[in-house]
Length: 120
Image (cartoon, rainbow, N blue to C red):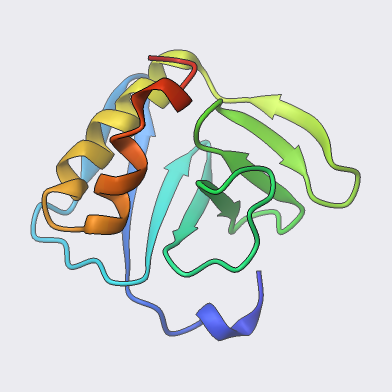
């Protein structure tokens, strides 16, 4: 992740054992931060599309990238799957993003492609 995202607005939420906690009065413009064991951030204007066009960067370990369609966590350096987020946590992430989509067209566009999400 590079410094041009340093001042982007974002929404952060935490997922723990299928429970999602977030700020209901969110204001989203450029990115969303997601916490699933680690803190993750989705950039609306991300210029790279690896490992998918809908992914999140890890704030705790800059080497990790989460494919939001599959739940697979990749190492950016090796391009190999490092781990996978639990299915129930990815489902809760999707449900939370459905709420975000009511206010943010970028997220609405991505989650409307339900066939891309292998854990649904």
